[in-house]
Length: 326
Image (cartoon, rainbow, N blue to C red; front, top):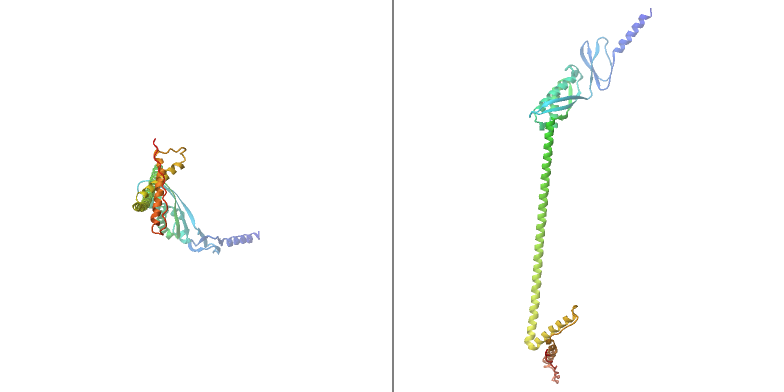
Protein backbone atom coordinates (compact mmCIF):
# COMPACT_ATOMS: atom_id res chain seq x y z
CA UNK A 1 0.00 0.00 0.00
CA UNK A 2 2.96 2.33 0.50
CA UNK A 3 3.69 2.62 -3.19
CA UNK A 4 0.03 3.25 -4.19
CA UNK A 5 -0.13 6.86 -3.02
CA UNK A 6 2.98 7.98 -4.96
CA UNK A 7 1.61 6.25 -8.03
CA UNK A 8 -1.67 8.09 -7.72
CA UNK A 9 0.11 11.38 -7.29
CA UNK A 10 2.25 10.66 -10.34
CA UNK A 11 -0.76 9.87 -12.50
CA UNK A 12 -2.58 12.95 -11.27
CA UNK A 13 0.44 15.12 -11.99
CA UNK A 14 0.72 13.72 -15.51
CA UNK A 15 -2.96 14.31 -16.14
CA UNK A 16 -2.68 17.88 -14.89
CA UNK A 17 0.38 18.43 -17.06
CA UNK A 18 -1.36 17.06 -20.13
CA UNK A 19 -4.39 19.23 -19.47
CA UNK A 20 -2.24 22.32 -19.61
CA UNK A 21 -0.98 21.50 -23.14
CA UNK A 22 -3.20 22.56 -26.05
CA UNK A 23 -2.47 22.11 -29.75
CA UNK A 24 -4.49 24.41 -32.06
CA UNK A 25 -5.15 23.08 -35.55
CA UNK A 26 -4.53 25.10 -38.68
CA UNK A 27 -7.55 27.20 -39.68
CA UNK A 28 -8.82 27.53 -36.13
CA UNK A 29 -8.29 29.95 -33.24
CA UNK A 30 -9.03 29.01 -29.62
CA UNK A 31 -10.18 31.60 -27.12
CA UNK A 32 -8.43 31.22 -23.75
CA UNK A 33 -10.33 32.16 -20.60
CA UNK A 34 -8.56 32.78 -17.33
CA UNK A 35 -10.82 32.51 -14.34
CA UNK A 36 -13.76 32.87 -16.71
CA UNK A 37 -12.49 35.98 -18.50
CA UNK A 38 -11.35 36.08 -22.10
CA UNK A 39 -7.63 36.79 -22.15
CA UNK A 40 -6.18 35.79 -25.51
CA UNK A 41 -6.76 34.05 -28.85
CA UNK A 42 -4.55 31.03 -29.29
CA UNK A 43 -3.24 30.82 -32.84
CA UNK A 44 -2.49 27.46 -34.53
CA UNK A 45 0.36 25.65 -32.75
CA UNK A 46 1.35 24.47 -29.23
CA UNK A 47 0.15 26.40 -26.17
CA UNK A 48 0.71 25.86 -22.40
CA UNK A 49 -2.12 26.79 -20.05
CA UNK A 50 -2.01 27.45 -16.33
CA UNK A 51 -3.68 24.56 -14.57
CA UNK A 52 -6.92 25.34 -12.76
CA UNK A 53 -6.84 28.95 -14.01
CA UNK A 54 -6.90 28.78 -17.83
CA UNK A 55 -9.29 26.91 -20.05
CA UNK A 56 -10.35 26.89 -23.71
CA UNK A 57 -13.52 28.90 -24.16
CA UNK A 58 -14.46 28.58 -27.91
CA UNK A 59 -12.93 26.92 -30.93
CA UNK A 60 -13.50 29.42 -33.74
CA UNK A 61 -13.25 28.38 -37.39
CA UNK A 62 -11.27 31.09 -39.22
CA UNK A 63 -11.75 29.65 -42.74
CA UNK A 64 -14.31 31.01 -45.16
CA UNK A 65 -17.63 29.31 -44.55
CA UNK A 66 -20.87 28.83 -46.44
CA UNK A 67 -24.24 29.29 -44.78
CA UNK A 68 -27.30 28.05 -46.63
CA UNK A 69 -30.38 30.25 -46.19
CA UNK A 70 -33.55 28.12 -46.30
CA UNK A 71 -36.35 28.95 -48.74
CA UNK A 72 -38.46 32.00 -47.94
CA UNK A 73 -41.87 33.10 -49.20
CA UNK A 74 -41.62 36.79 -50.09
CA UNK A 75 -44.33 39.19 -51.29
CA UNK A 76 -43.04 41.57 -53.95
CA UNK A 77 -44.10 45.19 -54.48
CA UNK A 78 -46.77 44.11 -56.99
CA UNK A 79 -48.24 41.56 -54.53
CA UNK A 80 -46.75 38.44 -56.13
CA UNK A 81 -45.71 35.59 -53.87
CA UNK A 82 -42.30 34.15 -54.76
CA UNK A 83 -40.09 31.57 -53.13
CA UNK A 84 -36.42 32.50 -52.68
CA UNK A 85 -33.33 30.50 -51.69
CA UNK A 86 -30.01 32.18 -50.90
CA UNK A 87 -26.50 31.37 -49.74
CA UNK A 88 -24.05 33.48 -47.69
CA UNK A 89 -20.25 33.27 -47.71
CA UNK A 90 -18.48 34.72 -44.66
CA UNK A 91 -15.17 34.58 -42.80
CA UNK A 92 -14.30 35.29 -39.17
CA UNK A 93 -11.67 37.98 -38.80
CA UNK A 94 -11.71 38.48 -35.02
CA UNK A 95 -12.16 35.30 -32.99
CA UNK A 96 -12.82 37.17 -29.74
CA UNK A 97 -15.67 39.24 -31.17
CA UNK A 98 -17.16 36.27 -33.01
CA UNK A 99 -17.15 34.27 -29.76
CA UNK A 100 -18.30 36.89 -27.26
CA UNK A 101 -20.09 39.70 -29.18
CA UNK A 102 -22.97 37.54 -30.44
CA UNK A 103 -24.63 34.39 -29.23
CA UNK A 104 -24.98 31.65 -31.83
CA UNK A 105 -23.18 33.28 -34.72
CA UNK A 106 -24.70 31.11 -37.45
CA UNK A 107 -28.27 31.70 -36.32
CA UNK A 108 -27.64 35.43 -36.14
CA UNK A 109 -26.26 35.58 -39.68
CA UNK A 110 -29.15 33.51 -41.00
CA UNK A 111 -31.79 35.67 -39.32
CA UNK A 112 -30.15 38.90 -40.44
CA UNK A 113 -29.85 37.73 -44.03
CA UNK A 114 -33.45 36.51 -44.13
CA UNK A 115 -34.92 39.79 -42.88
CA UNK A 116 -32.85 41.90 -45.25
CA UNK A 117 -33.73 39.57 -48.13
CA UNK A 118 -37.41 40.20 -47.46
CA UNK A 119 -36.80 43.94 -47.24
CA UNK A 120 -34.83 44.21 -50.48
CA UNK A 121 -37.00 41.96 -52.63
CA UNK A 122 -40.23 43.25 -51.12
CA UNK A 123 -39.44 46.72 -52.46
CA UNK A 124 -39.11 45.44 -56.03
CA UNK A 125 -41.66 44.26 -58.59
CA UNK A 126 -41.72 40.66 -59.77
CA UNK A 127 -40.10 41.42 -63.12
CA UNK A 128 -37.30 43.29 -61.34
CA UNK A 129 -36.65 40.44 -58.94
CA UNK A 130 -36.29 38.06 -61.89
CA UNK A 131 -34.08 40.30 -64.00
CA UNK A 132 -31.97 42.12 -61.38
CA UNK A 133 -30.34 39.38 -59.36
CA UNK A 134 -26.97 41.13 -59.40
CA UNK A 135 -28.53 44.26 -57.93
CA UNK A 136 -30.24 42.21 -55.21
CA UNK A 137 -26.98 40.44 -54.36
CA UNK A 138 -25.07 43.71 -54.17
CA UNK A 139 -27.64 45.38 -51.91
CA UNK A 140 -27.80 42.37 -49.60
CA UNK A 141 -24.01 42.19 -49.38
CA UNK A 142 -23.70 45.82 -48.33
CA UNK A 143 -26.48 45.66 -45.76
CA UNK A 144 -25.53 42.33 -44.16
CA UNK A 145 -21.81 43.15 -44.10
CA UNK A 146 -22.41 46.42 -42.31
CA UNK A 147 -24.71 44.76 -39.79
CA UNK A 148 -22.26 41.92 -38.97
CA UNK A 149 -19.06 43.96 -38.83
CA UNK A 150 -19.31 44.38 -34.98
CA UNK A 151 -19.25 40.59 -34.72
CA UNK A 152 -15.74 40.38 -36.16
CA UNK A 153 -16.80 38.68 -39.40
CA UNK A 154 -16.63 39.66 -43.06
CA UNK A 155 -19.50 38.84 -45.47
CA UNK A 156 -17.73 38.06 -48.75
CA UNK A 157 -20.70 37.13 -50.95
CA UNK A 158 -24.48 36.88 -50.86
CA UNK A 159 -26.04 34.98 -53.75
CA UNK A 160 -29.66 34.29 -54.72
CA UNK A 161 -29.82 30.60 -55.63
CA UNK A 162 -33.38 30.35 -56.90
CA UNK A 163 -36.51 32.45 -57.37
CA UNK A 164 -39.72 30.49 -57.77
CA UNK A 165 -42.78 32.47 -58.93
CA UNK A 166 -46.26 30.91 -58.62
CA UNK A 167 -47.42 28.43 -61.25
CA UNK A 168 -50.03 30.72 -62.80
CA UNK A 169 -47.52 33.55 -63.08
CA UNK A 170 -45.01 31.17 -64.63
CA UNK A 171 -47.56 30.13 -67.25
CA UNK A 172 -48.45 33.77 -67.98
CA UNK A 173 -44.76 34.60 -68.31
CA UNK A 174 -44.28 31.68 -70.66
CA UNK A 175 -47.17 32.87 -72.86
CA UNK A 176 -45.83 36.41 -72.78
CA UNK A 177 -42.36 35.22 -73.76
CA UNK A 178 -43.81 33.15 -76.61
CA UNK A 179 -45.85 36.10 -77.88
CA UNK A 180 -42.80 38.36 -77.65
CA UNK A 181 -40.68 35.91 -79.59
CA UNK A 182 -43.38 35.51 -82.26
CA UNK A 183 -43.61 39.29 -82.49
CA UNK A 184 -39.86 39.64 -82.92
CA UNK A 185 -39.87 36.83 -85.51
CA UNK A 186 -42.62 38.58 -87.51
CA UNK A 187 -40.77 41.89 -87.26
CA UNK A 188 -37.55 40.31 -88.47
CA UNK A 189 -39.40 38.57 -91.30
CA UNK A 190 -41.09 41.84 -92.33
CA UNK A 191 -37.76 43.66 -92.23
CA UNK A 192 -36.23 40.90 -94.34
CA UNK A 193 -39.05 41.15 -96.91
CA UNK A 194 -38.70 44.93 -96.93
CA UNK A 195 -34.96 44.74 -97.50
CA UNK A 196 -35.48 42.10 -100.20
CA UNK A 197 -38.08 44.24 -101.99
CA UNK A 198 -35.82 47.28 -101.78
CA UNK A 199 -32.90 45.37 -103.23
CA UNK A 200 -35.12 43.88 -105.93
CA UNK A 201 -36.46 47.33 -106.81
CA UNK A 202 -32.93 48.73 -106.89
CA UNK A 203 -31.93 45.90 -109.21
CA UNK A 204 -34.91 46.55 -111.50
CA UNK A 205 -34.08 50.25 -111.47
CA UNK A 206 -30.47 49.65 -112.41
CA UNK A 207 -31.54 47.15 -115.07
CA UNK A 208 -34.00 49.67 -116.54
CA UNK A 209 -31.34 52.38 -116.50
CA UNK A 210 -28.82 50.14 -118.23
CA UNK A 211 -31.45 49.00 -120.75
CA UNK A 212 -32.38 52.61 -121.51
CA UNK A 213 -28.74 53.57 -121.90
CA UNK A 214 -28.22 50.57 -124.19
CA UNK A 215 -31.27 51.50 -126.28
CA UNK A 216 -30.07 55.07 -126.41
CA UNK A 217 -26.62 54.00 -127.57
CA UNK A 218 -28.15 51.58 -130.12
CA UNK A 219 -30.49 54.28 -131.44
CA UNK A 220 -27.59 56.68 -131.68
CA UNK A 221 -25.49 54.17 -133.57
CA UNK A 222 -28.46 53.21 -135.79
CA UNK A 223 -29.10 56.86 -136.60
CA UNK A 224 -25.41 57.33 -137.30
CA UNK A 225 -25.45 54.29 -139.60
CA UNK A 226 -28.54 55.58 -141.43
CA UNK A 227 -26.91 58.97 -141.75
CA UNK A 228 -23.82 57.42 -143.28
CA UNK A 229 -25.95 55.24 -145.55
CA UNK A 230 -27.88 58.33 -146.63
CA UNK A 231 -24.62 60.15 -147.29
CA UNK A 232 -23.37 57.21 -149.35
CA UNK A 233 -26.69 57.06 -151.24
CA UNK A 234 -26.52 60.79 -151.87
CA UNK A 235 -22.94 60.44 -153.08
CA UNK A 236 -23.94 57.59 -155.40
CA UNK A 237 -26.94 59.56 -156.65
CA UNK A 238 -24.71 62.52 -157.28
CA UNK A 239 -22.25 60.37 -159.24
CA UNK A 240 -25.10 58.85 -161.30
CA UNK A 241 -26.61 62.26 -161.91
CA UNK A 242 -23.24 63.58 -163.10
CA UNK A 243 -22.81 60.57 -165.37
CA UNK A 244 -26.29 61.06 -166.82
CA UNK A 245 -25.68 64.75 -167.31
CA UNK A 246 -22.45 64.06 -169.17
CA UNK A 247 -23.53 61.06 -171.24
CA UNK A 248 -27.24 61.55 -171.72
CA UNK A 249 -29.56 58.59 -172.30
CA UNK A 250 -26.68 56.22 -172.85
CA UNK A 251 -25.75 56.27 -169.16
CA UNK A 252 -29.36 55.63 -168.20
CA UNK A 253 -29.50 52.65 -170.52
CA UNK A 254 -26.23 51.39 -169.04
CA UNK A 255 -27.45 51.49 -165.46
CA UNK A 256 -30.80 49.95 -166.34
CA UNK A 257 -29.13 47.14 -168.23
CA UNK A 258 -26.72 46.54 -165.34
CA UNK A 259 -29.51 46.18 -162.79
CA UNK A 260 -31.51 44.05 -165.21
CA UNK A 261 -28.59 41.72 -165.66
CA UNK A 262 -28.12 41.41 -161.87
CA UNK A 263 -31.78 40.56 -161.44
CA UNK A 264 -31.63 37.78 -164.03
CA UNK A 265 -28.44 36.44 -162.42
CA UNK A 266 -30.26 36.35 -159.11
CA UNK A 267 -33.00 34.25 -160.67
CA UNK A 268 -30.44 31.82 -161.98
CA UNK A 269 -28.67 31.37 -158.64
CA UNK A 270 -31.83 30.96 -156.57
CA UNK A 271 -31.84 27.52 -154.83
CA UNK A 272 -35.57 27.12 -155.49
CA UNK A 273 -35.43 27.96 -159.18
CA UNK A 274 -35.35 24.82 -161.31
CA UNK A 275 -36.95 26.39 -164.40
CA UNK A 276 -36.63 30.06 -165.39
CA UNK A 277 -39.41 31.67 -167.41
CA UNK A 278 -38.47 34.94 -169.01
CA UNK A 279 -41.13 37.48 -169.95
CA UNK A 280 -41.48 38.65 -173.53
CA UNK A 281 -39.68 41.87 -172.66
CA UNK A 282 -36.57 39.87 -171.76
CA UNK A 283 -35.74 39.55 -175.47
CA UNK A 284 -35.02 43.23 -175.48
CA UNK A 285 -31.92 42.53 -173.30
CA UNK A 286 -29.81 41.98 -176.42
CA UNK A 287 -30.75 45.36 -177.77
CA UNK A 288 -29.95 46.93 -174.42
CA UNK A 289 -26.54 45.29 -174.43
CA UNK A 290 -25.99 46.76 -177.89
CA UNK A 291 -26.83 50.18 -176.46
CA UNK A 292 -24.27 49.60 -173.71
CA UNK A 293 -21.64 48.83 -176.36
CA UNK A 294 -22.45 52.01 -178.28
CA UNK A 295 -22.27 53.99 -175.05
CA UNK A 296 -18.89 52.59 -174.21
CA UNK A 297 -17.67 53.25 -177.72
CA UNK A 298 -18.92 56.83 -177.65
CA UNK A 299 -17.12 57.42 -174.36
CA UNK A 300 -13.92 56.09 -175.88
CA UNK A 301 -14.33 58.43 -178.84
CA UNK A 302 -14.81 61.37 -176.49
CA UNK A 303 -11.69 60.49 -174.56
CA UNK A 304 -9.54 59.88 -177.64
CA UNK A 305 -10.71 62.82 -179.78
CA UNK A 306 -7.98 65.15 -178.60
CA UNK A 307 -5.08 62.74 -179.41
CA UNK A 308 -3.14 62.15 -182.65
CA UNK A 309 -5.19 62.57 -185.78
CA UNK A 310 -5.36 58.88 -186.53
CA UNK A 311 -8.27 57.34 -188.25
CA UNK A 312 -11.30 56.93 -186.13
CA UNK A 313 -12.26 53.37 -185.36
CA UNK A 314 -15.08 51.86 -187.25
CA UNK A 315 -18.50 51.76 -185.62
CA UNK A 316 -20.00 48.36 -185.44
CA UNK A 317 -23.66 48.29 -185.03
CA UNK A 318 -25.35 45.62 -182.97
CA UNK A 319 -28.58 44.59 -184.55
CA UNK A 320 -31.57 45.11 -182.24
CA UNK A 321 -33.85 42.20 -181.97
CA UNK A 322 -37.45 43.08 -182.29
CA UNK A 323 -39.66 41.90 -179.47
CA UNK A 324 -41.34 38.61 -180.21
CA UNK A 325 -45.02 38.73 -180.25
CA UNK A 326 -46.73 36.27 -178.02
